Image (cartoon, rainbow, N blue to C red; front, top):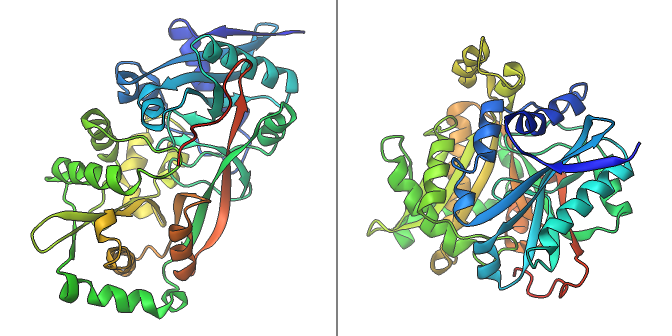
Length: 385
Protein backbone atom coordinates (compact mmCIF):
# COMPACT_ATOMS: atom_id res chain seq x y z
CA UNK A 1 0.00 0.00 0.00
CA UNK A 2 1.21 3.53 -0.73
CA UNK A 3 2.11 5.95 2.06
CA UNK A 4 0.02 9.08 2.54
CA UNK A 5 1.29 12.06 4.54
CA UNK A 6 -1.19 14.52 6.03
CA UNK A 7 -0.82 17.52 8.34
CA UNK A 8 -2.04 17.23 11.91
CA UNK A 9 -5.43 18.86 12.24
CA UNK A 10 -7.33 18.60 15.48
CA UNK A 11 -7.00 16.83 18.81
CA UNK A 12 -7.27 13.27 17.47
CA UNK A 13 -4.38 13.68 15.04
CA UNK A 14 -2.25 15.42 17.68
CA UNK A 15 -2.87 12.49 20.02
CA UNK A 16 -1.68 10.13 17.27
CA UNK A 17 1.43 12.29 16.82
CA UNK A 18 2.24 12.14 20.52
CA UNK A 19 1.43 8.45 20.98
CA UNK A 20 3.41 7.00 18.06
CA UNK A 21 6.78 6.55 19.86
CA UNK A 22 5.07 4.81 22.78
CA UNK A 23 3.91 2.14 20.32
CA UNK A 24 7.10 1.98 18.26
CA UNK A 25 9.46 1.61 21.23
CA UNK A 26 7.26 -0.16 23.77
CA UNK A 27 9.46 -3.28 23.72
CA UNK A 28 12.80 -1.47 23.60
CA UNK A 29 14.50 -1.78 27.02
CA UNK A 30 16.56 1.40 26.58
CA UNK A 31 13.73 3.74 25.59
CA UNK A 32 12.27 5.87 28.39
CA UNK A 33 8.67 7.09 27.88
CA UNK A 34 8.43 10.86 28.31
CA UNK A 35 5.66 12.42 30.33
CA UNK A 36 2.72 12.84 27.96
CA UNK A 37 1.59 16.10 29.52
CA UNK A 38 5.05 17.59 28.95
CA UNK A 39 4.96 16.50 25.30
CA UNK A 40 1.61 18.24 24.72
CA UNK A 41 2.91 21.42 26.36
CA UNK A 42 6.08 21.29 24.28
CA UNK A 43 4.13 20.93 21.04
CA UNK A 44 1.55 23.55 21.96
CA UNK A 45 1.61 26.75 19.95
CA UNK A 46 0.37 28.68 22.98
CA UNK A 47 2.66 27.04 25.53
CA UNK A 48 6.06 26.87 23.78
CA UNK A 49 8.09 30.09 23.46
CA UNK A 50 9.44 28.82 20.12
CA UNK A 51 6.23 29.94 18.39
CA UNK A 52 6.92 33.57 19.22
CA UNK A 53 9.76 33.46 16.71
CA UNK A 54 8.98 30.49 14.48
CA UNK A 55 6.34 28.38 12.78
CA UNK A 56 5.88 24.64 12.37
CA UNK A 57 3.80 21.98 10.64
CA UNK A 58 3.25 18.54 12.20
CA UNK A 59 2.89 15.69 9.71
CA UNK A 60 1.68 12.11 10.04
CA UNK A 61 2.31 9.25 7.60
CA UNK A 62 -0.45 6.70 7.07
CA UNK A 63 -0.51 3.33 5.35
CA UNK A 64 -3.90 1.74 4.92
CA UNK A 65 -5.30 4.10 7.55
CA UNK A 66 -2.65 3.23 10.14
CA UNK A 67 -0.13 5.78 11.46
CA UNK A 68 3.38 4.61 10.54
CA UNK A 69 5.48 7.75 11.00
CA UNK A 70 5.61 11.38 12.05
CA UNK A 71 7.78 14.46 11.48
CA UNK A 72 7.72 18.21 11.96
CA UNK A 73 8.86 20.87 9.51
CA UNK A 74 9.68 24.17 11.19
CA UNK A 75 11.45 27.49 10.72
CA UNK A 76 13.23 29.36 13.47
CA UNK A 77 13.36 32.91 12.16
CA UNK A 78 15.58 34.14 14.98
CA UNK A 79 18.08 31.39 14.17
CA UNK A 80 18.08 32.34 10.49
CA UNK A 81 18.46 36.03 11.28
CA UNK A 82 21.35 35.41 13.67
CA UNK A 83 23.21 33.09 11.29
CA UNK A 84 22.17 34.91 8.11
CA UNK A 85 20.89 31.83 6.34
CA UNK A 86 17.62 30.43 5.00
CA UNK A 87 17.59 27.08 6.69
CA UNK A 88 14.54 25.05 7.58
CA UNK A 89 14.48 22.36 10.23
CA UNK A 90 12.81 19.02 10.73
CA UNK A 91 12.22 17.25 14.02
CA UNK A 92 10.16 14.84 16.13
CA UNK A 93 11.05 12.09 13.66
CA UNK A 94 9.57 8.70 14.55
CA UNK A 95 8.83 5.96 12.04
CA UNK A 96 8.71 2.29 11.27
CA UNK A 97 11.68 0.64 9.55
CA UNK A 98 10.49 1.38 6.03
CA UNK A 99 12.33 3.50 3.49
CA UNK A 100 9.09 4.44 1.72
CA UNK A 101 7.69 5.86 4.96
CA UNK A 102 10.91 7.78 5.53
CA UNK A 103 10.92 9.13 1.98
CA UNK A 104 7.29 10.24 2.17
CA UNK A 105 7.78 12.03 5.50
CA UNK A 106 11.02 13.77 4.56
CA UNK A 107 9.72 14.79 1.12
CA UNK A 108 6.59 16.25 2.68
CA UNK A 109 8.64 18.21 5.22
CA UNK A 110 10.99 19.39 2.46
CA UNK A 111 8.04 20.54 0.36
CA UNK A 112 6.63 22.60 3.24
CA UNK A 113 10.03 24.22 3.84
CA UNK A 114 10.70 24.83 0.14
CA UNK A 115 7.35 26.58 -0.23
CA UNK A 116 8.54 29.04 2.42
CA UNK A 117 11.80 29.82 0.68
CA UNK A 118 14.11 27.56 2.68
CA UNK A 119 17.35 26.56 0.97
CA UNK A 120 18.41 23.65 3.20
CA UNK A 121 16.80 21.15 5.56
CA UNK A 122 18.62 20.39 8.82
CA UNK A 123 17.69 18.14 11.73
CA UNK A 124 16.29 16.56 13.63
CA UNK A 125 15.80 19.30 16.22
CA UNK A 126 12.75 19.37 18.49
CA UNK A 127 12.68 22.49 18.01
CA UNK A 128 16.25 23.62 18.75
CA UNK A 129 19.46 22.00 19.93
CA UNK A 130 18.55 23.09 23.45
CA UNK A 131 15.60 20.70 23.16
CA UNK A 132 16.20 17.17 21.91
CA UNK A 133 18.37 17.00 18.82
CA UNK A 134 20.11 14.56 16.52
CA UNK A 135 19.74 10.90 15.66
CA UNK A 136 21.50 8.41 17.93
CA UNK A 137 24.39 6.77 16.05
CA UNK A 138 26.46 5.39 18.97
CA UNK A 139 25.42 4.14 22.39
CA UNK A 140 22.28 2.21 21.48
CA UNK A 141 22.76 -0.15 24.44
CA UNK A 142 22.89 2.66 27.01
CA UNK A 143 19.83 4.07 28.73
CA UNK A 144 19.36 7.76 27.88
CA UNK A 145 19.50 10.44 30.56
CA UNK A 146 16.88 13.14 30.92
CA UNK A 147 16.10 14.91 27.61
CA UNK A 148 18.44 12.64 25.65
CA UNK A 149 16.72 11.02 22.64
CA UNK A 150 17.03 7.30 21.94
CA UNK A 151 16.55 5.75 18.51
CA UNK A 152 17.03 2.28 17.05
CA UNK A 153 19.90 1.97 14.53
CA UNK A 154 17.65 2.00 11.47
CA UNK A 155 16.81 5.71 11.86
CA UNK A 156 20.28 6.84 10.79
CA UNK A 157 20.40 4.18 8.06
CA UNK A 158 17.16 5.42 6.50
CA UNK A 159 18.27 9.05 6.49
CA UNK A 160 21.57 8.17 4.85
CA UNK A 161 19.87 5.95 2.26
CA UNK A 162 17.80 9.00 1.28
CA UNK A 163 20.83 11.21 0.72
CA UNK A 164 21.08 13.09 4.01
CA UNK A 165 24.62 14.04 5.02
CA UNK A 166 26.20 14.69 8.38
CA UNK A 167 26.02 18.31 9.53
CA UNK A 168 27.31 17.92 13.08
CA UNK A 169 27.82 15.27 15.76
CA UNK A 170 26.77 15.85 19.37
CA UNK A 171 28.68 13.97 22.06
CA UNK A 172 27.87 12.73 25.52
CA UNK A 173 30.84 12.32 27.87
CA UNK A 174 30.46 9.97 30.82
CA UNK A 175 32.01 11.24 34.03
CA UNK A 176 32.62 8.91 36.93
CA UNK A 177 32.67 11.67 39.49
CA UNK A 178 33.68 9.29 42.26
CA UNK A 179 36.90 8.56 40.32
CA UNK A 180 38.52 11.79 41.44
CA UNK A 181 42.01 10.36 40.98
CA UNK A 182 41.55 10.35 37.19
CA UNK A 183 41.23 14.14 37.07
CA UNK A 184 44.41 15.89 35.99
CA UNK A 185 45.91 17.74 39.00
CA UNK A 186 46.05 21.08 37.16
CA UNK A 187 42.23 21.29 37.42
CA UNK A 188 42.40 21.35 41.22
CA UNK A 189 45.31 23.81 41.29
CA UNK A 190 43.55 26.28 38.99
CA UNK A 191 40.29 25.93 40.95
CA UNK A 192 42.05 26.67 44.24
CA UNK A 193 43.50 29.93 42.84
CA UNK A 194 40.17 31.20 41.49
CA UNK A 195 38.92 33.16 44.50
CA UNK A 196 42.21 34.40 46.01
CA UNK A 197 43.61 35.48 42.64
CA UNK A 198 40.54 36.70 40.75
CA UNK A 199 37.92 37.21 43.44
CA UNK A 200 35.50 34.78 41.82
CA UNK A 201 33.34 32.65 44.09
CA UNK A 202 30.83 29.97 43.22
CA UNK A 203 27.45 29.89 44.91
CA UNK A 204 24.40 27.65 44.58
CA UNK A 205 21.22 28.93 43.00
CA UNK A 206 18.09 28.84 45.12
CA UNK A 207 14.50 28.15 44.21
CA UNK A 208 13.48 31.51 45.71
CA UNK A 209 15.84 33.42 43.42
CA UNK A 210 15.75 31.02 40.47
CA UNK A 211 14.16 33.51 38.08
CA UNK A 212 16.83 36.13 38.81
CA UNK A 213 19.56 33.50 38.50
CA UNK A 214 18.19 32.27 35.18
CA UNK A 215 18.26 35.80 33.81
CA UNK A 216 21.96 35.85 34.72
CA UNK A 217 22.30 32.46 33.01
CA UNK A 218 20.70 33.90 29.85
CA UNK A 219 23.25 36.71 29.73
CA UNK A 220 26.13 34.25 30.18
CA UNK A 221 24.67 31.86 27.62
CA UNK A 222 24.20 34.54 24.97
CA UNK A 223 27.86 35.54 25.33
CA UNK A 224 29.56 32.19 25.91
CA UNK A 225 27.66 30.03 23.40
CA UNK A 226 27.13 32.54 20.59
CA UNK A 227 29.88 31.11 18.37
CA UNK A 228 28.60 27.55 18.70
CA UNK A 229 27.01 25.71 15.81
CA UNK A 230 23.23 25.76 16.17
CA UNK A 231 23.18 28.62 18.70
CA UNK A 232 19.98 30.61 19.17
CA UNK A 233 19.96 33.54 21.63
CA UNK A 234 17.75 33.23 24.69
CA UNK A 235 15.20 35.99 25.24
CA UNK A 236 12.84 36.68 28.14
CA UNK A 237 10.18 34.28 26.85
CA UNK A 238 12.68 31.43 26.45
CA UNK A 239 13.92 31.98 29.99
CA UNK A 240 10.37 31.96 31.33
CA UNK A 241 9.80 28.60 29.70
CA UNK A 242 13.12 27.26 31.03
CA UNK A 243 12.18 28.47 34.52
CA UNK A 244 8.90 26.58 34.26
CA UNK A 245 10.56 23.39 33.00
CA UNK A 246 13.22 23.41 35.71
CA UNK A 247 10.69 23.52 38.53
CA UNK A 248 10.42 19.73 38.42
CA UNK A 249 14.17 19.08 38.34
CA UNK A 250 15.68 21.96 40.33
CA UNK A 251 18.25 20.83 42.88
CA UNK A 252 20.25 23.36 44.88
CA UNK A 253 23.22 20.99 45.01
CA UNK A 254 23.64 21.04 41.23
CA UNK A 255 22.60 24.53 40.03
CA UNK A 256 25.40 27.08 40.48
CA UNK A 257 26.68 30.50 39.43
CA UNK A 258 30.20 31.92 39.48
CA UNK A 259 30.30 35.60 40.48
CA UNK A 260 33.03 38.22 40.52
CA UNK A 261 34.00 40.16 43.62
CA UNK A 262 31.61 42.90 42.46
CA UNK A 263 28.72 40.44 42.12
CA UNK A 264 28.79 40.10 38.32
CA UNK A 265 27.69 36.61 37.16
CA UNK A 266 30.57 35.30 35.01
CA UNK A 267 29.96 31.56 34.75
CA UNK A 268 27.21 29.00 35.16
CA UNK A 269 26.70 25.27 35.59
CA UNK A 270 23.24 23.73 35.45
CA UNK A 271 23.29 20.03 36.18
CA UNK A 272 20.03 18.10 36.31
CA UNK A 273 19.38 14.95 38.35
CA UNK A 274 18.41 12.19 35.94
CA UNK A 275 14.66 11.97 36.38
CA UNK A 276 14.50 9.37 33.61
CA UNK A 277 14.70 6.79 36.39
CA UNK A 278 11.46 8.27 37.69
CA UNK A 279 9.85 8.66 34.25
CA UNK A 280 10.41 5.00 33.47
CA UNK A 281 8.29 4.05 36.48
CA UNK A 282 5.66 6.68 35.65
CA UNK A 283 5.30 5.24 32.12
CA UNK A 284 4.38 8.62 30.67
CA UNK A 285 1.52 9.36 33.09
CA UNK A 286 1.08 11.40 36.25
CA UNK A 287 -2.03 9.45 37.31
CA UNK A 288 -2.98 7.30 39.03
CA UNK A 289 0.41 6.46 40.63
CA UNK A 290 2.99 8.38 38.60
CA UNK A 291 3.04 11.32 40.97
CA UNK A 292 4.02 8.99 43.84
CA UNK A 293 7.15 7.99 41.92
CA UNK A 294 7.93 11.65 41.27
CA UNK A 295 7.75 12.42 45.01
CA UNK A 296 10.36 9.68 45.54
CA UNK A 297 12.69 11.11 42.91
CA UNK A 298 15.56 11.88 45.31
CA UNK A 299 15.75 8.21 46.24
CA UNK A 300 15.55 7.06 42.61
CA UNK A 301 17.97 9.48 40.88
CA UNK A 302 21.51 8.09 41.06
CA UNK A 303 23.14 10.06 38.22
CA UNK A 304 23.09 13.55 36.75
CA UNK A 305 23.30 15.25 33.39
CA UNK A 306 25.49 18.34 32.98
CA UNK A 307 23.32 20.38 30.64
CA UNK A 308 25.00 23.80 30.64
CA UNK A 309 28.49 24.82 31.71
CA UNK A 310 29.91 28.05 30.33
CA UNK A 311 31.92 31.16 31.13
CA UNK A 312 31.73 34.69 29.74
CA UNK A 313 34.51 35.20 27.16
CA UNK A 314 36.19 37.97 29.20
CA UNK A 315 36.62 35.57 32.13
CA UNK A 316 37.62 32.38 30.33
CA UNK A 317 41.33 32.87 31.10
CA UNK A 318 40.78 32.96 34.87
CA UNK A 319 39.95 29.33 35.56
CA UNK A 320 36.22 29.82 36.24
CA UNK A 321 35.48 26.60 34.36
CA UNK A 322 37.91 24.69 36.59
CA UNK A 323 36.20 26.17 39.63
CA UNK A 324 32.82 24.97 38.35
CA UNK A 325 34.22 21.49 37.69
CA UNK A 326 35.59 21.34 41.23
CA UNK A 327 32.22 22.48 42.60
CA UNK A 328 30.51 19.63 40.74
CA UNK A 329 32.85 17.14 42.39
CA UNK A 330 32.06 18.63 45.80
CA UNK A 331 28.35 18.25 45.03
CA UNK A 332 28.98 14.62 44.16
CA UNK A 333 30.63 14.02 47.50
CA UNK A 334 27.79 15.80 49.32
CA UNK A 335 24.92 13.99 47.56
CA UNK A 336 26.48 10.59 47.00
CA UNK A 337 25.72 10.75 43.26
CA UNK A 338 28.93 9.54 41.70
CA UNK A 339 28.33 9.50 37.98
CA UNK A 340 26.75 11.40 35.16
CA UNK A 341 27.06 12.61 31.58
CA UNK A 342 27.86 15.96 30.00
CA UNK A 343 25.86 16.49 26.82
CA UNK A 344 25.38 17.73 24.20
CA UNK A 345 28.96 18.67 23.41
CA UNK A 346 29.61 19.69 19.79
CA UNK A 347 32.34 17.59 18.21
CA UNK A 348 33.94 20.89 17.11
CA UNK A 349 34.01 22.32 20.66
CA UNK A 350 37.68 21.53 21.17
CA UNK A 351 38.08 23.40 24.47
CA UNK A 352 35.17 21.61 26.14
CA UNK A 353 36.17 18.23 24.77
CA UNK A 354 39.74 18.71 26.04
CA UNK A 355 38.43 19.71 29.45
CA UNK A 356 36.18 16.65 29.72
CA UNK A 357 39.10 14.45 28.71
CA UNK A 358 41.18 16.10 31.46
CA UNK A 359 38.41 15.24 33.91
CA UNK A 360 38.78 11.56 33.03
CA UNK A 361 35.65 11.39 30.92
CA UNK A 362 34.95 9.23 27.88
CA UNK A 363 32.51 9.56 24.98
CA UNK A 364 29.70 7.03 25.40
CA UNK A 365 26.98 8.35 23.07
CA UNK A 366 26.86 10.23 19.81
CA UNK A 367 23.94 11.86 18.02
CA UNK A 368 24.10 13.11 14.44
CA UNK A 369 22.35 16.13 12.96
CA UNK A 370 21.76 15.70 9.23
CA UNK A 371 21.28 18.10 6.35
CA UNK A 372 20.12 18.12 2.75
CA UNK A 373 20.10 20.94 0.19
CA UNK A 374 16.59 21.62 -1.07
CA UNK A 375 16.01 21.68 -4.82
CA UNK A 376 16.42 25.20 -6.14
CA UNK A 377 18.06 26.32 -2.90
CA UNK A 378 21.33 28.14 -2.47
CA UNK A 379 23.04 25.34 -0.61
CA UNK A 380 24.44 25.34 2.89
CA UNK A 381 26.45 28.55 2.79
CA UNK A 382 26.01 30.80 5.78
CA UNK A 383 26.16 27.88 8.19
CA UNK A 384 26.48 28.61 11.89
CA UNK A 385 29.97 29.21 13.22
